[in-house]
Length: 468
Image (cartoon, rainbow, N blue to C red; front, side):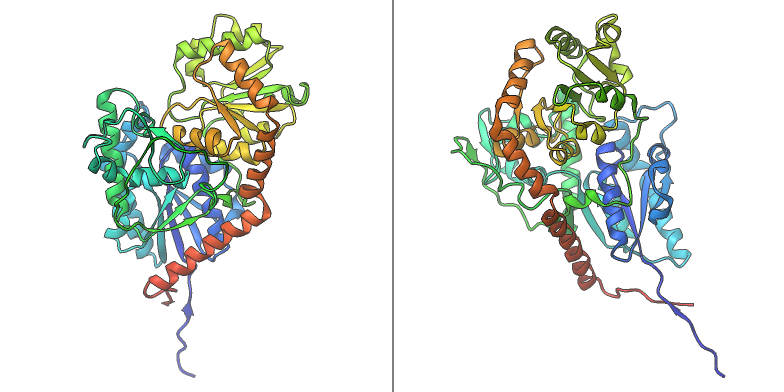
């Protein structure tokens, strides 16, 4: 009998590269789990300091592999925006390139890469290695469109070539969007030098993303079409941008059961027992996110005194480095009224019947979790895309209100408006169904399937067969 050659089809791998921050890693892991159903083996690639924090939250039976790469930063270097940017541009590309090469040498099939646009350095690695790359945007489609409109903002004189605002009035950047101002743009954080550096980061990101054929967005198809539009009095930006990648909105995939939300910090579960002792609908939940420095010690103190004076029950997520803003003896004084924790199991807190609403920075993951748990929002955006999210929450969807400070009057009025507006709860229920209902989940899975089908059509030689 002659020799028989075995032909084995190996499970193709997908390399997923998130930007190394909580709000980026979480949706990327959810996306990774959804790709398993399509016959892929996901490989999450993160720097070592992120890998250590998430590996224990990944179910060993989920078929998601996690691999760490070096970031080139010393143990004593703070991982802030600029140090991470340096690591992504100088050290991490070499290590990712080596990983892809090693997988190929071991006969593995890397079908494609999914790269967070804020980790755009990895797009170039994929192209050098001949691996197809899809982009990932872990936020609203509207905020991606805002970044994509940067060339038009420069061309029309709304911003300078270094990103400085040149238009003082309200502006409708894109059709069917709420009014913003140029001061709401995502790179306007910190000092003038910091703003210029962040703008350079975004323009580089945009330049690299032009090479992409596909973009997966952690949002839902009707995000811009929900709500009651009112006449807009601001100028409308004229768009003349080049062709963009095919966009697939896959936001509701966050409900995939194989993985839980990874947490970078230890969650204080005692806040759930504390909530069990509170009256239904009585507690204000407060969190300003995990990435951008919250609100400054002065505002921490003002909010603390306001809550104490109001007698308002609360749970406040406040990192230890910001406890210096609290008045002396504050945590002990308010121990019956409220609870200050370093990190909380946010989804479980928002699901609790004792929580009435959420005072938030309007980060996209937090916004979606509030909608999922049907909690109205009191908005205090801090930086980045949060101003755009806030505009949608308060003006487009009308499921929350914005406050401009933490004085007793501002917070009381915000709470009153949220609690007394019955239409707000009706809108929240409708939005919950649109984003988290069964129809939404089916639509998001269909979008992911459409992407996979499109990838297979456009990629020569797929599926890959290896003879051994």
